[in-house]
Image 1 (cartoon, rainbow, N blue to C red):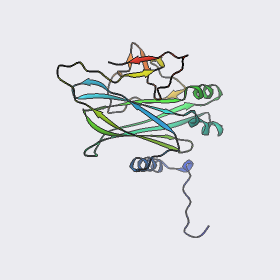
Image 2 (tube, rainbow, N blue to C red):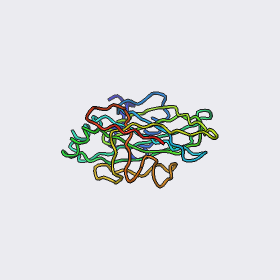
Image 3 (cartoon, helix red, strand yellow):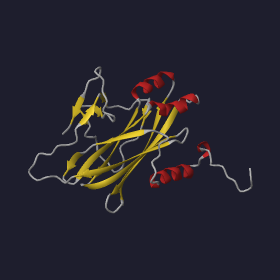
Image 4 (cartoon, rainbow, N blue to C red):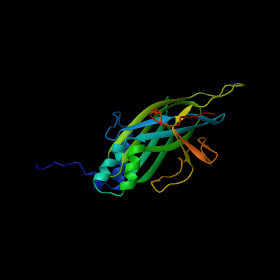
Length: 223
């Protein structure tokens, strides 16, 4: 090549600093990243007068696992991150970082193809108006997808019954860590012993796309 030409560095040889810089640039960019399709669903559950728990559920298409499967990998990792800014001041008021490892051997890969990959996290905020930016990155190829949403958390009304978000789901699971998907706890901003989505030893998994078949059981959850 001509003198002075530099090709982009391949993700496979990124250093830790390079990977952090890539995520930071994606957060700062005004252009959405669409290499890794991701859709996000948020909800609101009031904990007390000044605290609202906002569960964040993200769904990746089954194709997200195909890159690693074609490479013959037995597992791959996904980085998930969210940044919440005050809509008026643009100041960061909350952040979430998590990494999950997914097994993709033949048995688990077919199962994941049917169920897709759903990530669940959460953050605690005060009443107000916010801008949420969510990012997902597949750590074999470095592909990134982003999702942005405006969140309005109304203050509580005196002497009135309060209603949370109404969640729709087709999946209720026992609360336990599985070997197929390993993930960390909720964000530091969401310090709680249990999520409002956990009831009687079970956790409701919100439907992100809200698409159901007549073969599924539809669960409706609210407080």
